[in-house]
Image (cartoon, rainbow over all chains, first blue to last red):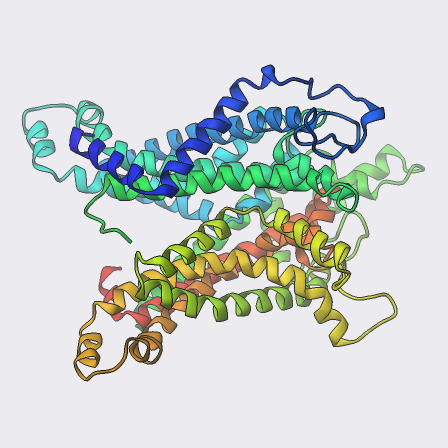
Length: 281
Length: 316
C-alpha cells in the first residue's frame, strides 16, 4: 500500500456524498456501540407502567413491551451486532487469507485440494447450515461468530489466491527467490503487504454479510439469546406488536439497513479507490 | 461446447459425493440418539439394542454411510423424527408452493431489472444511474424480513388490502386467492433479486455499448433508445440465463426467512419447523436438496455463459 493509493482512496471517498455519509454513519454507530453504557436508561430495566410508549423526549425510540427503554436497547443491540460482524470478519478474513496465499503461492496439489474444499463450501447452502449449526451448538455470541466466519471465508480466499498468483510472478518476487530467500520470507515480506488492498475490500464486504447473517439468525430466534438483544432479535419481538407499536419494528430494521448499506457502499468505494485499473463502474 | 459440458458434469459428481459426506457427518454429529425416537416407555434395554441393530446404528460410521447413500440413491431420504412421514414426500409436497413463489419473484425481478439495468448502463454516472444505483444498494442491504414486516404493516394492517399470512383463506380454494396471498412475499423476494440483476445487467450494458455494432448503428442514425432496446437488449438477455441459474441455488435458502414471516407453506417453512423440532432427517433432506439445486444451478449458469460468450471456453 503506497502513498498514491491512499491518496486515490481518500479522493474517491470524499468525492462521493454516499461515501461520506457511510463513513459518518458507521463512526456514529461504532461510537454508540462503544459508549452504550452512557445511555440515560438501563436496557434491561423493566417498567410495566411505561409499556409500549411511543417515541418521546424521555424515550427517544419509545419503550418496548416490558417498558424497557428502546433507545438503550438499540445501542446495546448494536454493540452485539457490530461485534459479531467485526469478529466474524476478522476470523473469516484470517482463514481466507491463509488458504488463499497457500493455494496461490504453492499451487499444484495443495492448490487443487484447497480449491476443491472451497467448492464444497460454496455448494452447501450456507444459511441452512448456519441454522443447523446454531441448533447443534449452544447459541452463544462466540459460537455464532465462529459459525458465521466458518461459512464466509471463501470469497476472500478466492480473491487472495488470484492476486497471489499474479504477485508471485512479479520481478521483485522472482528476484527475492533467486537471491535465496525462503518461501515464508517472501510471503511475509513481498506477498502479504501487497495483498492489503484486496483484503481490505473483501473484509469490508464481509462485515456487511456477517451482520446480515447474524440479524437473520437472531430474527428467527436462533441467534443471541434474551435478555441480550441484537437488532435482529428486537425485530423478532417487534413482529408481535406491529399493529400497536410499529416503531418497535422500524428502528432496529433501519439500523441494520443503514449499517449494512454503509459497509457495502464503503466496500465498493474502496475497490474503486484501491484499484484504479478497474475503471469506475 | 460438448466437451465443456461433459467436463463440468464430471466435476459435479464428486462434488455431490462430498456434499453427501458432509450431510451424513452432520446427521451423525447431531446431539441426541436417533434410536430414542423409536423407543416407547415399555421397551426393555434388549429391545432397544435390537432396534439399534435393526436400524444398523451399531455398525461403524463408514458402513452406515454406504447404507445411507444406497438408500439415498434409491430415492429414500429417510423418515421425519416428528411425524414419521417420508422426507422426500414432504419435500415434494411443499415444493410447488416454494417453486411457484420463487418463479413469480424471479420473473418479476427480471422484468423490472431489464429496463432499469439498460437505462442505468446507458446513463452511466448521470442522475438516472445514480438513482437506480441507490435503489440497488438498498436492495442488497435491506434485511428482507424487515421489508416483509413493513409491507405487512402497511398493506395488511393499515390498508387491509392484502392478507398477511398463509397461502389460502380457509375454505376458499381459488387461484385468485392464492395469488392475493402471494403478492407480498413475492414482492419482497423480487426486491432482493432485483438489486443483483440490475447490477449485472447494468455492467453488461456498459460493456455492450463499447462494441462496434453500437457505433455502426449510431452512424446509421439510430436513436439512443432504439440502439438500447433493440440491439443491446438482445445481447444482454442471454447472460441473464446465468443469473437464473445462480438464483436456483437460492430457491430454498432464500425463501426460509421470507416464508417464515408470511407463514407461506413452502420448503423454507418446512425447514424452519424441522429446525425448531430438531428433526434432523428432514433438515438433511432439505440441505441435500438445496445443495443439489445450487450445484445444478451453477452448472447451468456456466454452460449458459459459455453459450452467451464463446470466448469463455478457452479459459477453462
